[in-house]
Length: 317
Image (tube, rainbow, N blue to C red; front, side, top):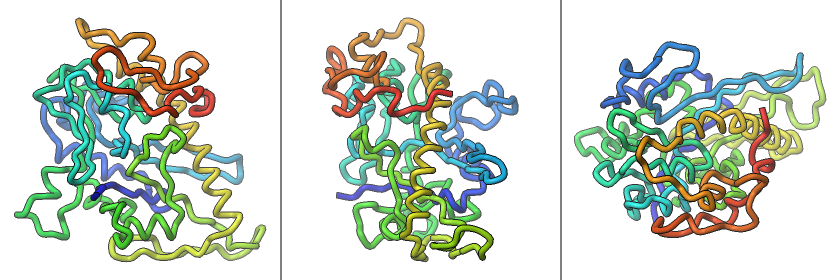
């Protein structure tokens, strides 16, 4: 079965936000419009963003690095946002694996926002519905567009080719080769959500076996149609993967409060039962021992791994 997804190369992402602005431009409507946000130019922009880029510094001086981390819906193969939807508005397409929201069925209860452990759901206050990244489903199948341009807007806009798009289930696709050759990984695989989108770790800055003072290795970036083999299958590469996981833990720890604030139930909306909240938000106080039903009439259970303690998923910030 086809599973369309993005692969993002953290080594060549420069944090220019071209992906963010192109996404906003392509999806302009209602609160997603570029100038209709509540505070578009303030220190903490608010409004509807399908794609966000966080920038932060890691390491200890003088060995520090700046990391730019793009984040959007991961189009999980086992999406926890789908079974909790009481109206069936959230669904996963069988033909390409894209997770979408049916605006005609969505009632804005925000159950899916609580269920998503990645904070990928956005509430459109003007329309009163949940929104999210669609992988630009309206343009990737547009036959009036040249085949080489049938990509999500963020992919075409990226000046460093840090974003790759394709079928992760096709072993011969560019993104599958990049994942194999660069050691691509999914976010928080212990949750059991099986994210389709994956990330490529930062390349080793020092050649294998060299401790300090030697020439740096600068292999060509992996781009569409050119999957370069890094050859860094070494302890240094493994350490970079572990460093990336630490970075992501810090990142999602900082986003947790904002995600919960965005996910507060709308006035008059049905309230999610507390038993379901403890699983739907990733874990309750101290974590639950096993998956619980998502709530009366919510159509299923969350993955068993959703009951992991919060301390294992987030770093308090």
